[in-house]
Amino acid sequence: MIELLFLICAYLIGSVPTAVWVSKGVFGMDIREYGSGNAGATNTFRVLGPKAGTFVMVVDMLKGVIAVRLSYLLPYYQSTEHLTQLVNFQIGLGLAAVVGHIFPIWAGFRGGKGIATLFGLVLAIQPIVAICCVGVFLMILFLTRYVSLSSIIASIAFPILILYIFNEPEVFYRIFAIAVALMVVLTHQKNIARLLTGNENKVPLFKNKRQKD
Image (cartoon, rainbow, N blue to C red; front, side, top):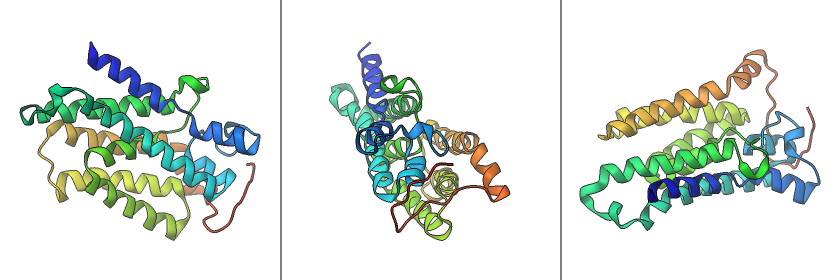
């Protein structure tokens, strides 16, 4: 029962609609009415520029980190005998936050794609793997200026790192890593189509830019 309450709490944390609040509170507009229509860091970068986009990305990542850290409030999971249960519960908490980000109760259940929050989940559980994924993300972003492409490639790098580089022994975590890559690819089908046709928007890395597609 207590775990269910924590999962609900994690969902509510993930439901904080950072992009919506920033766009409305600072810019006087709803980010969901511009660009791709998503309330996430990628669309914020595209529409409101790198400063707002970076802020939204960091806060959305922290939602995943904080949700995972809720597990440390329960004494049961602090024992080394329950390490597997701890990791499984942390993944559950993180995923609840991701669901909250995608379907935020505080913003009419219209959120983003959950990539930054998902990254926060990985960062809290396996920071070295997360840092490697960030390196991949930043490299692709610098080379192409496509946040969507950077997210897709970084997500594909995630299971490769887990399965082959770090050889993670936890079966559930290995399955989770593969599922993450598949989920990111599936949720970015429109972006992939735009990338293939050359219609995907690049983000302004070095200047503030606001545009409406």
